Length: 523
Ligand code: ADP
Ligand code: ZN
Image (tube, rainbow, N blue to C red; front, side, top):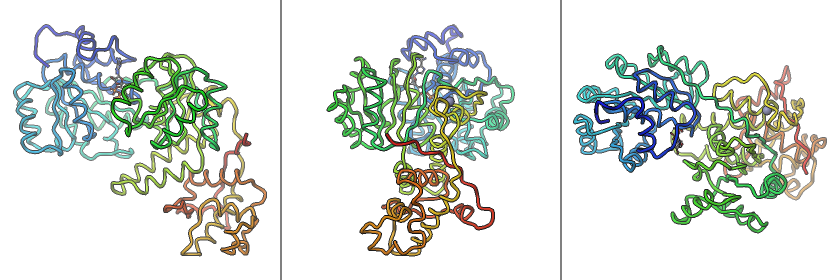
C-alpha cells in the first residue's frame, strides 16, 4: 500500500467500500482486520466462503508496504491477481509457472514499492533470492493461507511450510496472519507452534449454520424425490440443485420445467452469455431453481436461497459444507437435502481411480471421500459430525437434522457382510469374468436369471444364502461396506473386490463386527 501517513484503522471500512464495493464487514472480519492493522498476529479459522481474503487484503492496503501472501494454490494465483487488478489493487505473484521475464518484472515492481499485494508459492521462500528480495522492499503484513499445510500429520502437509518460521525471525516487527478453513484443536496448536505464532490472537468462527436442516436420503429416483421435496416443502422457493455432470444438469432442469417448476441450467459448457443471464435471473427473480454443477455458486450472495439439493454425492465434506452453506444466508429456516446411493460411491471411487496426479494425490482424494461417506452413513447427529470435521465440538445433538429428527436404527451386519464378501471371493476365482453389485445380489438372493445360469452361479455354495434380505437391503450392505472400506470397486463395470481389511470380517475366529445402518423402507 502507499505509505501515506494519514491512514489509520478507520480507513479499513473505506477500503472495504471504495475498493471492494461491500457495505459492511461480515462475521469477525472487522475485528481481525483491526487487530492486524494494529500490528498484531492472528490465527484465523473461518469456513470456506466465509471471507478470509479480505482479512489480509485490507490490512495490506491500509498498512504501509506490500502485503506478502503465501499460498499453495498456485493454479489460482493468476485469477486472484487478475481480480484484484480489476479493482485497482496493484497485485502480482511469483511462482514456478512464470518465465524469467515475468518474475523479473514482478520483483522489480515489489522492490520499487509499486505493489500492494504479492502472492508467493511456499517453495519460493526456501530461496535466498526471495528472502533478499523481500529485504529490499517494505513488507506490511505476512499472510499464510491454507495454514493447516504446516501440520505434519494433517491431510495436506507441505514441507515448504515448515520454512515459514524464518519470516518471523527475519521480520519480527511485521504482523502475520495465518488462515485456514480446516483445523482441529491439535492442528491449531501445531500451526501456532510451527509458525511461531504462539502470541497470536485466535479468531475461530462458528461454523454452525443452525437454520439449515441437514438431510441425507437414500437415492432411488432422484429427480422424482427432488420434485416431491419441492412440492411438499419448497413450493415457489428459490434454491440450488447440484449435479455432477452437465448432462444431468440439463436433464434435471428439463424435468423440473416439464413439471411446472421454474428452473434454469448452469454449467461450464454453456455460453458465457447464457450463464451470465441465468445467474442474474436467479439473483433478481423470486423462486427460481438453479440446476447446476459446482461451477455455480462462487461469490453468489443471494440471501433467500431456501434449499440446496445434492442429487449426486459431493467429493468432500468441504465441498458439501460450502455448497449447502449457500442456503439460508438470511437466517431463515432452510433445507440442505441430498440423495445418496450405492452408485454414487462406485462413481466417486472410479473418478479417483481415473484422476490425474500421483498416488499421494489419489490418497488425499480418497480421504476426502471417506469423510464424506462417513457423514452420509452416520447414525449420529449430522451437524455434530459436520462441525467435528472442522474442529468444532458441539455438546448436544442438534434436533435439526434427519438423524436427530428420526434416529436411524442400526443392526449387526457381520453375517450379511460375511455372506457378501465370500460371494466376492468365489467370483474373483473366475479370473476373466468380472461382476458388479447386480449379479452378486442375484446370487445371494438365489435368483435364476439368464446371467446366473449362463455362468452356473446357481451351483455356488453361496447361491441363495441371502434370501432373508431384499435387493434394496443388499444394496445398502454393499454401499456401507464400500463406505467403510471393507469392499472396493475396480474397473469400468464397477467390479466388486476385497480390500486389505475384508479379511478381518471373513476370519473364523473373532471376526470384525460390522455395524450397519438400517435401510429405510422405500416409498
Ligand atoms: P474464503 O477465502 O474464506 O473462502 P473469500 O475471501 O473468497 O472466502 O470470500 C468468499 C466470498 O464472499 C467472495 O465472493 C467475497 O467477495 C465475498 N465476501 C467476503 N467478505 C464480504 C463482505 N464483507 N461483504 C460481502 N461479500 C463478502
Ligand atoms: Zn442433529
